[in-house]
Length: 501
Image (tube, rainbow, N blue to C red; front, top):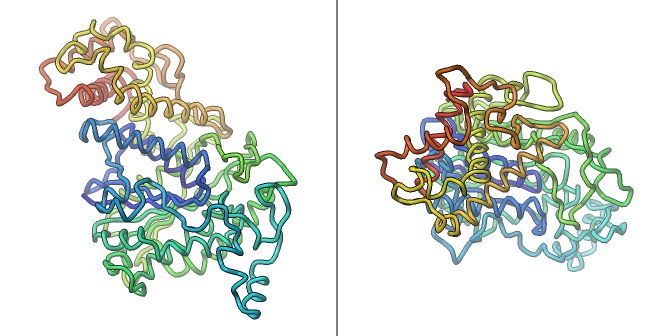
């Protein structure tokens, strides 16, 4: 199976990766010639970033669910793996989804570059290159050289580019290059209006394309001509005004213009990337808390992050013939944007372009329906309904097991939080009436009714589950739950709600 290595940089990278994980869990798959295994590599010096920690936990639960149910069951149908499991080098590279940035924690930038060991001319040059002031994590004004980097680069991509350049000399990069095959692909997710993402994208891209000049790695030919996609996230949210913070909304546009100008010569201008996706939103809604990172940096999920995740799906749908590279250059670069059909502050499925609606509406609705049944009705159905009693049984012992109690329940709770946060955000995404009856579950959708068409309720749900389960064999109760509910929710939503497969 081919692999897609996703480099998710900074807080935005983690949030987009979270949205992608939700899509994959619901069963969304690219319409491509072959299947891909997803290998996320999160790059963020801010280890206490709550967005990063939430995404890591989500990925861990996803991986555990697949390990216990296998693939081919509809939900959780795309493998996601940590890099060390892929290359079989647990003792040499990180066992998590996060790349270990060395010498960053509790370190000032001047210490990282051994400023005091420089000779006089180089010290003077460094002071010129990194002149200016910023705010540290104690909200004190300091010179840029005195910035502590464990909360990120707080809007200073010039510092970030120096620190992140260590990637090319890391054990992870050597293993990545040595295990990269001709059919594999790379996707880079980053924002452009901060520090970590704006610095990380061109740095990682350059290191990959310059692989032939790196004598420390094997597999350089495959890597240099890799099929590379990237997502550039421009400003899409508002933040509270705080004069003591190094992060100011008024700087977002200026930083975006500066980064795009740099990309014009060093990314798009030299054909370094095969497919580049742009996304932004100029709607200034509810402001986020102005948190440079010292308070954990936990942002509500946003629709733009869901739309951004769809760029990854789209990239995998592009044929190999349209992503050819030669000599480290893309032969026919592709540039794309995302748009909705209707200008609205509260997006529903009907506001999507038709292909996007077909891609996500059924699958997301299925996962919502699964979560709703398990939360509201499973306890009443256990050991009473035929589908539950048929072997392998789904009983009270099953719901007390760690698979259901921890992995699946935690994942579905995070899925509910993700939907609720997007619904409450501005611009909002709220296609569901989650807390109402089954028949009112999807906004803008009317359930087909008539004397030959029964009511959509849990009695009908149980009947369809039992019909689907009859005569079928399942390898385990875990696999049975995932497969049975995927097939049943698909039937209900296509036959009763008119959603298209």
